Length: 102
Image (cartoon, rainbow, N blue to C red; front, side, top):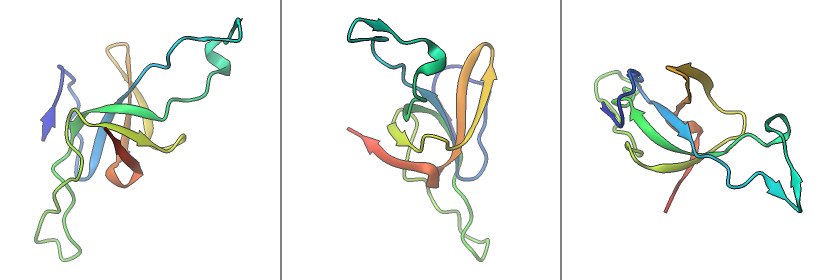
């Protein structure tokens, strides 16, 4: 398992911890958009990754396709949001990651 920053989260199996990337400016057409009206981010950076899940027979671990530091796209309502030390993170399965950016 690899982690970035000092996050005390150790995802299990094929789960990853993602820190959502902040949206750019909140002004559109000169109007302020409050946090409650903003869309949920769908892009983030992986800050921790589990070791991968075991195959169907349970003998071999399947390596993860994503790694710490990858910028990824994920489904709008994927995963579970958690707050640790005032920071918001998203824990999701590797299969919820739609693409690696860049």
